[in-house]
Amino acid sequence: MNGFLPAHGGCLCGAVRYRISAPPLLADICHCVQCRKQSGAPYLPWIAVAAPDFAWIKGKPARFESSPGNYRHFCADCGSPVVMTGGLEPDKYGVTIGSLDEPDRFPPTVEAFTVRRLAWLHPMPGLAQHECGNPEF
Ligand SMILES: [Zn+2]
Ligand SMILES: [Zn+2]
Picture 1 (cartoon, rainbow, N blue to C red):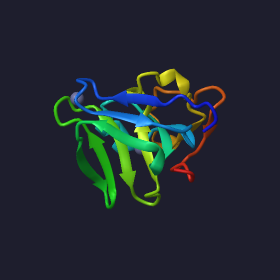
Picture 2 (picture 1 turned 45 degrees about the vertical axis):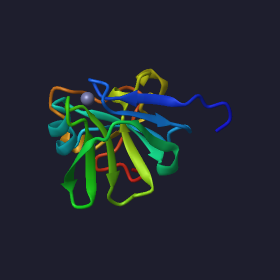
Picture 3 (picture 1 turned 60 degrees about the horizontal axis):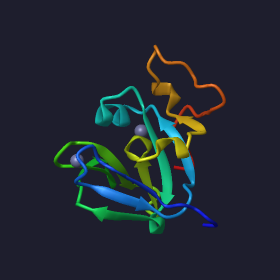
Picture 4 (picture 1 turned 90 degrees about the vertical axis):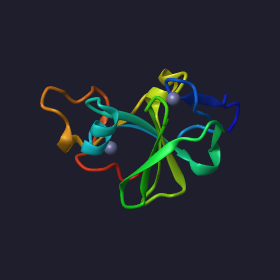
C-alpha cells in the first residue's frame, strides 16, 4: 500500500462509516436485478476490497441476506447500501462506490451482468463487458 491514502465513506445520514486502507482489487458496475432493487437505481457501482483492508469505524449496519450466504449491509436509519459480504469470496468486501466520500478515486473498468442491463442504457465506452457475473467478484 505504497502511499495509499485511506478512503473513507458512509451512509447518507452519517450513522455508519468505514475506512479502506489499501487500493481496491476491482471497480465494476453491476446490472443485476438484486443490485437494481436494493439501490432503486438502474445499476450499482462497486469496488472490491480485501477483507483485512476494510474496517467499520462508526455505527453498525443492518444486513439482508440477498442470496444464500450473501449479505447486503445498509444503514438501518437512512437505508443507504454500503457493503456486500460473503458468497463465493468471503475474503473480499464489496463497497458501493456511491457511498465513498471521494467516489471519483476508483472509476469502474468493468460492467457485469450486462444481460440484465436496462434497454434504455448503453455500454459505457472503454469498460469491459461481462454478460454474467464478474468472475473476479
Ligand atoms: Zn445512515
Ligand atoms: Zn449486482
